[in-house]
Length: 294
Image (cartoon, rainbow, N blue to C red):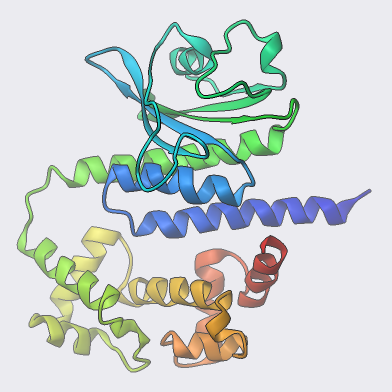
């Protein structure tokens, strides 16, 4: 049994998924979510091309919304943006049937449509929000039989995470910007711009003071908006810091523990416990997995 190969696969899987869910956490618009999948996740999976279509209910067609590879020369630009009706191509039938498909050899599939160039294999997964069609993630590859069941499994999970986030974003925007949301926005700013989470003595009380509200109120804001406790909220920022720094040249000479302390954890055990809670693996396993990747 080649168990080694298998565990590596599982690691890849965990890595791609935890990478995606971490980056999703910070996205504030559907647009950002879709571009994040095409640019970052697809690259992590080793695919060379990807287009996400969203379903336009009025026009009853699929429109290209984000892309990676030749279709995306730079920035947020899609070259030769096309629309596809539900009775066209593989993408159309995946959208219509709401079932993912793996096409080992496109030239043997009469439904195949060439967009920017002929590619020999294709994988296509629907994004469903509450069972109704939201869009389709489509990736093609020049080699036939390139995609496998593992790819299909991963993309399916990614589509599910994506739909969950879209749902969150679309229901959130209907809520008026309440006072709680205003404080939360301020808090996010303090976290992202001033990086206050790097202070190991940061407490609920001291953070609340910065915002001019009570600790109790702050705790309830975080809880109602993110469904997590203050300490979990702070630790998520620390962990995404650690993840970035564990594979940045600048921190290459640091020990893993000191990267954790630098991010604001006040002890090795607090750091390890939080890291494992949010990523499912230890910091050293994470670093190992990054080395495999680079």
